[in-house]
Length: 320
Ligand code: FAQ
Image 1 (cartoon, rainbow, N blue to C red):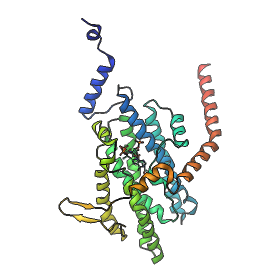
Image 2 (spheres, helix red, strand yellow):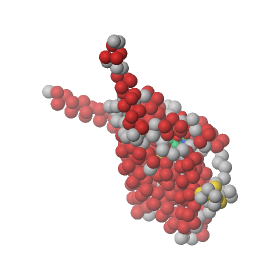
Image 3 (cartoon, protein in one colour):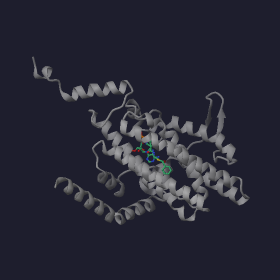
Image 4 (cartoon, helix red, strand yellow):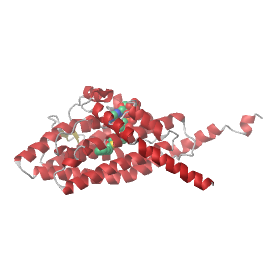
């Protein structure tokens, strides 16, 4: 009898258990064996998601001091703070996979990590706070609700709270636009101009079309992604068309029409050259976003030093 039969390889047992968990649609936890490629995929997706939340604070942070009332300012501050919190839960979830926070920061600051394309667009008007909430958080919800059922436990659990907060974010954005649409002609024009700029970039947040999405098939087989990029984009379009009607804004898409046969709204082609340009660093605000993040990281060095010194003192007190 071979030793292999007496003591089956730990990896083989782990792999069988992993496959059982995925087949039964149960959760994989940090201490479970998992294939390297599954771990790498999760680190990629979760860290990109965390970076998106952190960089995503900037377009709205830009308006905190200029919000039109104290109430709007308080709401916007709370929203931006929520985004920081989402980034932190997500970095923590990624750390359970064996990458350190410092490694992830380094990837972001050096420009080697991706973050969502949407945050490389400028926010020149107050109405953009409405469009970000309604369209960007709306797209984020469509994409993220299914992630609450992702197979990796720490990611799925982080997403539950994040989605609750995102749905408040979406409603506050909708309400900003509704107030503008119920206002003066100038305010209505401001809201429409902003929706005109955010509609297509929001549709592109879902990622490339399915036939150009290299990661989807494997991520779906592992129950990380539950729906393809195009399926989620379709859900989003179906969701916002009636909402746009309530707002009284026009979606800037001449090809948008109800398809009786499919039972869905058809939408026009998207400019994937623009998407690729944004991903390669040539969007409106890529250099502004990364430059600001780098400065904030440098300015925060003293906080990290102080926290490290404090943690060291606590440890030495416990040890003594
Ligand atoms: N931007 O094969 P796929 C938010 C990349 S949070 C940049 O389809 P996958 C909240 C993709 O990474 C927004 N890159 O990839 C908020 C891959 O590159 P890689 C973030 C993109 O992973 C609101 C390549 O293209 N949400 O908004 C984008 O299967 C307001 C090929 O693509 C998440 O991260 C993009 N839009 O599907 C905060 C959700 N799309 O890594 C502040 C979690 C694709 O191979 C204010 N992530 N790429 O070099 C996901 O669901 C997925 O990762 C997808 C992409 C759907 C984004």
